Length: 57
Image 1 (cartoon, rainbow, N blue to C red):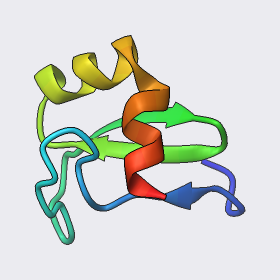
Image 2 (image 1 turned 180 degrees about the horizontal axis):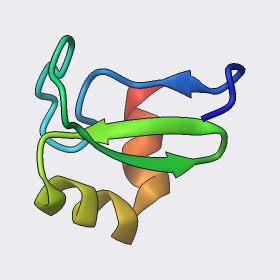
Image 3 (image 1 turned 45 degrees about the vertical axis):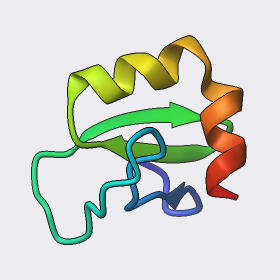
């Protein structure tokens, strides 16, 4: 992951705080790496990334 990419430590789908957790599920969208508590939340994000990405900005 390039150093200039921002990261997200709150699951944008379920709003779980992921700070300090290892093994998070990641997904890159518009130069931001979003992290999720599970593959299920990642799947929801992948279907509608703009919906969830707007909520985290």
